[in-house]
Figure 1 (cartoon, rainbow, N blue to C red):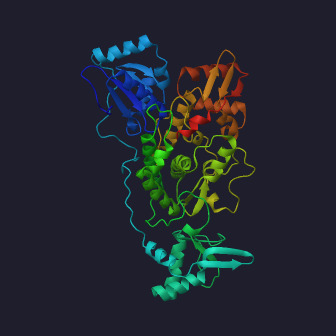
Figure 2: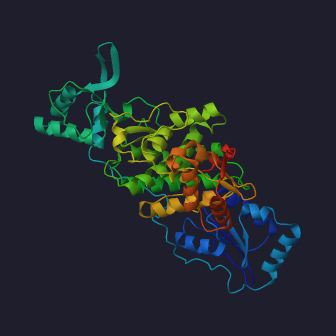
Figure 3: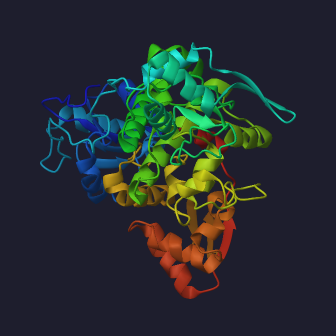
Length: 489
């Protein structure tokens, strides 16, 4: 099923995206029909998103055409009556392509910058990496007691300066400057986090430090030193997301209903992904713009979820989900970020999450400097995938982040698991996401419905909602949440 395969007669055109289980299901069904299929990856051909919306009125994928006849999504394909399906197959096999058949994309697609390195990563070894390697075997690192506490794998500032002078032949000022560089580049951290990486390293201080790789925590990318020169955060997040999404797609079952996580974890490409994830340890976060933060943390969140599934398995009950989102973490820019920290601390402007008693970050938490100033409600639809269709975006870019997020919200609201409008009863049934995070959408039913209306695409559903709201006294209720859809990110 090549991307640009076609026949002298007709063809089925499928707009899809990598890692979308609904797209996989649709293409499996089409293979059984033995019809020529052109599979167009909207992720690689982002310039076609607007055309797709114009042709179909929909923002979700897959979207399927038999010649110029728009069938709809995977759900619509599966529900076709046998006689109608046979008519469409005959149409493709026996009739010439009509002039208004959806066109094929250009041979050289625009990729929004995502995936343009095709998973390749070249490590330029950082100038301090070899020094850190020597330090690990230099007899400096040991155990130190402070009061009743014992700090293993630690060293004092004085010990480090002495070692640099005696073993590396550095003058005192050069040794102090080198220590400062090790702090700034996040190769080492203060045991008590009182020596900030942008603070001043003082030779006479008796502060205890550790190498970042020796700092005890459970981050999935910890335990090794990030020895490459720090990569630009946005580029690294794009590369990581593309790598794990490609890996995920390769291990999605033929019917799109399950993922072989064991096979995925044994794939050599996953080991390569883990090596690259280590480089998150020393990325610079404080200089990121709002758009860069949104794209970076959304991509990392979605990649981290899959990494967490591979290491711990997908959570199956409420307690496991709570533990999973509060435990699974990456070491990013010298600090540990759990999934909860990313969603509620960074992307929601440090608001309490579901079942949380306090805000993720205290006033003195250095991670608070990275948090967005306020909650961004659109992120909820980039961190979730609907049960009947996916947004035509899987990897987010700073250059187009607001447009991409609006598209994701529009796609979510198109799905009946996101929003159902019952004109007869004057009722709107919404995803539990709107209940859990109601404060992000205005805090009241009235403001919530206004937000939903403003973010819907032009459609009969939107027209129905406008009619209900105009009539007044709209009832709002919330749909059961399908956790199974969350295993596809």
